[in-house]
Image 1: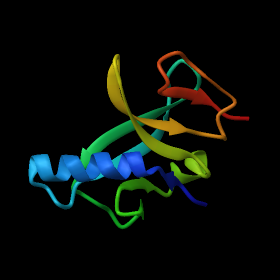
Image 2: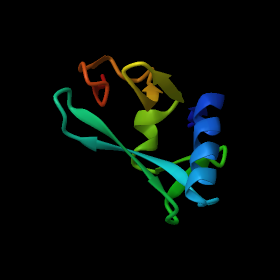
Image 3: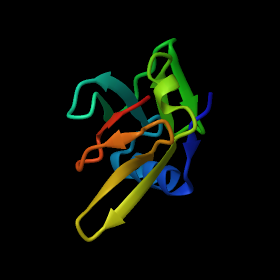
Length: 106
């Protein structure tokens, strides 16, 4: 199982590391039950890792429970007029909600 990290996500995390003077900063992505479509993404910046975490390209980490829901997804960073955010393009999601943080799978 793999998670693809777009160069835009890597570049943004490098910028955040420099701005916050935290060279070990990573983006944690978890998938939890809930949200309006059944599952939801939870993202946070962290320097903490556990033994069960899987790290991708020294940028993103996730846990062994969330990874099957994220396998094959691409994490990118978008900076638009309406906001800047990390985005997940997930081929496993068959539907989602308007906010982009909730999805369902088959």
